[in-house]
Length: 279
Image 1: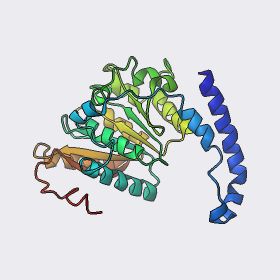
Image 2 (image 1 turned 45 degrees about the vertical axis):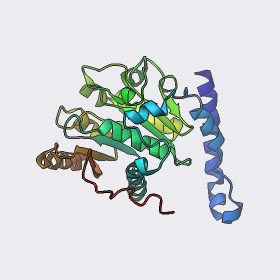
Image 3 (image 1 turned 90 degrees about the horizontal axis):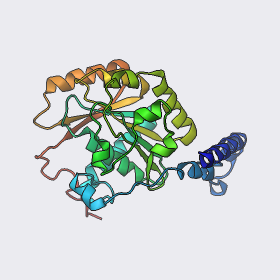
Image 4 (image 1 turned 135 degrees about the vertical axis):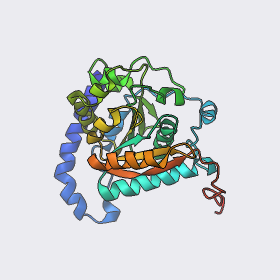
């Protein structure tokens, strides 16, 4: 924690200095502009997270395909780019990943999207498992956490101790167990305080949230007031269109709809990545 405090103090001081110099930087010719003040301190703040210990071959077997790019990652890279464009246009930062029911692959989609974003070196992403009823992100990542996000929310452990870093610009927050009162936890003022603190301290470009199925309970619907938009993941040939319509309507009542991902589709006919080797 001492290392984190030092890093945060440097970051705050650097942000103050950056605010004073921002007007002059905008007026300077493009060729003479330097990196924003505070970047080094922010790098140091992110460096406190322990590195994620992963086996890429094993994770590929779990359908985590976006590590290296290439044809297998092409659909996730396209999703990443669409997210970046929509977020830039709408000024979105917090994105929930939801599904109407279980088994659609929302956790795998969220993890691949986060890893794809991590391959953009100028972007920082925090990805959190907020499916407190049936947490699965740690399984997709092949991890065995000893605390959960509920411990971070209630300040029993610091996020700098709990989070695990991939590369230098992606941090995952996972769970070690299910939580019985998950809806109340997600709608608590402590959860909003945590999200605000993470944004203030680590200044991520995006925060991704793996949520429980929308039609299983009120967890996701109650939490949507904390996010800027939601991405809907549906299972091809399994998710009824009536459920998709209900979920899209529920989301639009409280926040933005980023789009719908059709997952587990066997009939793409090579639409995506068919010409990946063109260049």
